[in-house]
Image (cartoon, rainbow, N blue to C red):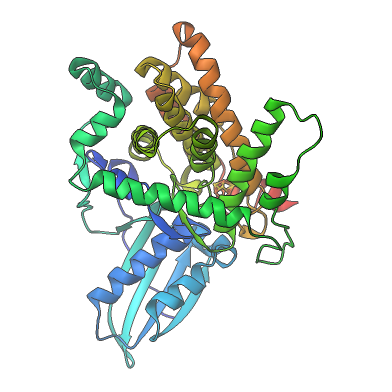
Length: 414
Ligand code: SF4
């Protein structure tokens, strides 16, 4: 293997001058990890386009991609995407002179001759950046990117967050969101009817079906709510862990939270699909603010960035369904993140199973609680949503790498 020297890329912090479309946040893709499967898959597709005459490739994986890439299936998605060309995969977990915790180098060859190489960063939610190339997202369609800015705009115009999304997104947005909602429902329904053991060797039993059907005599309405919400979150998360199609919300690992809350509410209270789509857009704006101002990558900021963000999105979406004020929606999202601050990413064996699946269920219940609390207490709140996003980012930056999707600390070290 050749040693390749690269300059240090600029920090990812300055990467976006505004917010990208919600179509970049909600994406249908194969699990189990947006950073480890969808991102590398996109990188390989782009690389193959640049070097169409290559007959073989080499991929070097660094950081979290090297440490948990096997468990997350990064090697197989790269090989599958670049096939039929042969691809050599090298795991290099020790090189820490990398611009992002999810860094990979791709090399294209024709015979023995190297045609070229690129360094990619999988920066969360399936999004990729190329080292040394200015990031110009074709999907950048929001100029405002903090909650304070967006709130001021919405108040001035007398509109809600979903209308703010509608104003900024391109034609076809609601049709796209409708496809997203159908895909979310499909992953719940498939997950509820699935049984057996998850792949990967941990011998984790699928539990969504059991949770959904298990009824105790005299079950209280609160217990029933918890059981059903959890069964929906388990259903999506188990589909994700099985490598099936799910919707990133905002990532694969945290894909169960938002659909669980919305599906439960639709079935319980009969909300129309149109209302659900507006709620999804509202939750999406909240997720986008976090993605732009901090991170939605477990490898960059720990699980607070994935499950914490999903919980904020679900809380905001539910707030929209209940027609809460902008202040109350903000407070619900703030509560949802505040109590996930410091949450580590420590998947056992690098598989998105333990603690990830249960964590989706707990976050879905927490989102519902956050909305209830915000409805009662929003007058007395002290912390803004933008404040908590900043705190999450700083907490993530200060967190040891042991707890950022490396499978070296926490539960993964047991
Ligand atoms: S622990 Fe959280 S951030 Fe880490 S892989 Fe699991 S869901 Fe994603």
